[in-house]
Length: 292
Image 1 (cartoon, rainbow, N blue to C red):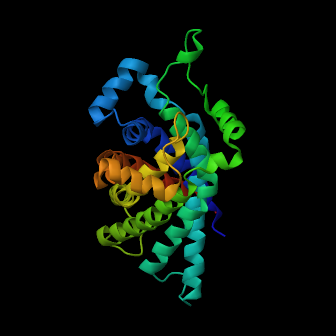
Image 2 (image 1 turned 180 degrees about the vertical axis):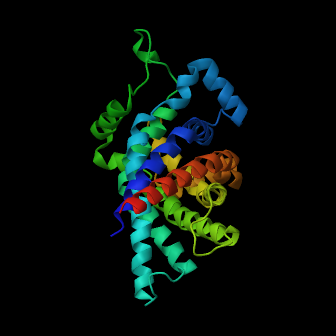
Image 3 (image 1 turned 90 degrees about the vertical axis):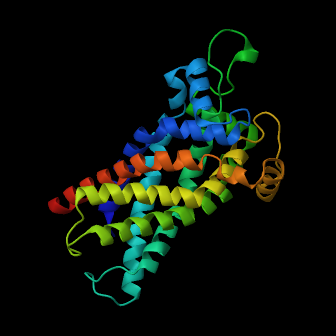
């Protein structure tokens, strides 16, 4: 088993959260709040009403859980890839087949849903909560006072299954998107590396990571929109009866373009975030392998 990939994935994931969280908050608010029609309006409104803190609401939990889920993704990917490569009867130093990379990435994306779903719903609920916690007026106070309080409130009011609202959409987002993620990363590294047997240069790693993130979000954004809407549904008024009703109702009322809300922002955010993720991942993995 490749243990180093679990460790390197954990550090890389946490580093990526720190880099990309403010834009993630903007993306979630645009996807779930119809009154916000653009990126700059959302940024301006958040700054005016909540200050800089508004962009970092709910970050403590994803910082912890993304490090865990990223560990699961990278660790599962590497070990699944090893198994698939072995099943083909290939030697250890033979190039990995592209279809094996795709399938291993898909497995990694699905594997982390059980860890990611509860943290993701807490993150989304806190990001969409625009009131500040101040004053004594109960009506003006936010429903959730922090990540732990949000987690406990959802469990109390909606049951344990409430923590897995939108998990189906999350799986449909992360399976294909992580398959694309690792496939693009490996393909770009192969194309830009002159020596196929050597580790890719750092500039290649960062470019490949950034492009991989952008391609992955291009695939995953439609399900990301549906996931976010299902996760916030019922906080005030309930709009959707389930996964398919959410898709049909969203498209009926807002057109097919609604499925790509936040795509541009996702791609803009994805490049620096995944550049950072893969740079940190490669740094840790190379360090651990030289020590072993």
